[in-house]
Length: 70
Image (cartoon, rainbow, N blue to C red; front, side):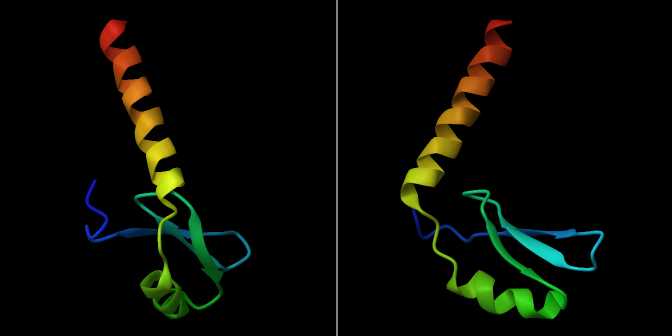
């Protein structure tokens, strides 16, 4: 597994006016801010937990296997 792969972040708007940044590799919420422009500083500093990335990949494989078997 190559950890140097560029990480992308999804932004989700909330009813309270905040925006959340979600990591596309480990699916953790990196930050939640009222100003979306403030999210970048958290995203730059984010480091995925290798155990969480492994769990996500294992769940994806299990789901894909279940879809193929059915």
